Image (cartoon, rainbow, N blue to C red; front, side):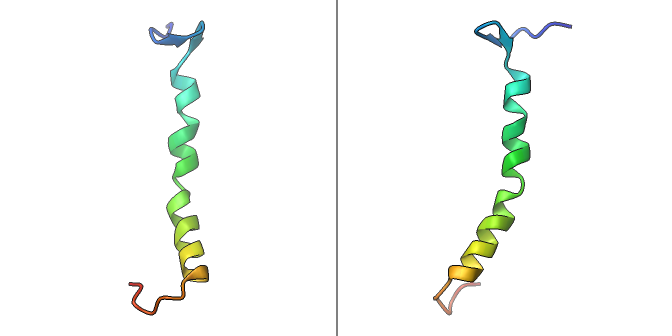
Amino acid sequence: MESKTKLFGHPVHPMLIPFPLGLLGMPVIFDLLAMFFSTCSTMA
């Protein structure tokens, strides 16, 4: 089965898969950074 969507002759789908997987852990990292660097006492 050949990909219909190509960019310079390479299939696009395998190039896009790492983005959602890589961004899956970012909310946890940003929450930890916010807790560590937070100086505001009203943070929920």
